[in-house]
Image 1 (cartoon, rainbow, N blue to C red):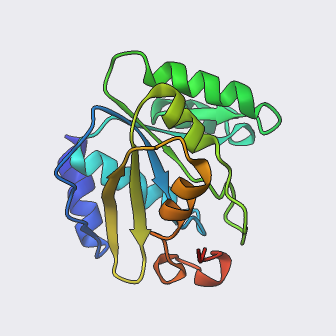
Image 2: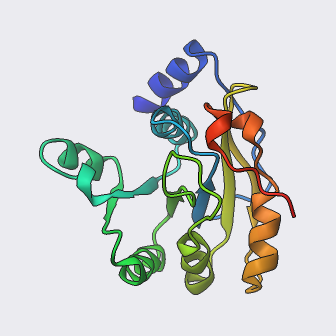
Length: 184
């Protein structure tokens, strides 16, 4: 029932879905960038509802206060304590290793503000869980949303991150001035 409503709402808002990669894994980490607006969350959730993929997301723990916290958890939210990064990697890795279909969206910038450095947790979670990273974007310029590539981490953090970061551009962001465009 929610799927047709989400699809209708996305179209009504003028968004289209990017062509999906041929390979669609049962379990993945979803790298979402650029992340410069709170609207990213809503557009992203509408997208996942439209395609019918069970997805969760990481969000700072401060948002998980009642009653909003109950709603966020029901939507797949996983609270993150910023000072316990290693524990977050382990907790999410265990979730992804549970055997059920699951996709966890992570914004490696970790903030909507301009940030040169990306957090590496999304990469380590995928690597340690042995799952691919789905590269997803919310392109405000073209009004397109979706997963555009499935990437398998090689274990070479520097090369893999350079490749991944080069796939995202400031022109896609809601607020381009807040996205640090990586150039390798």
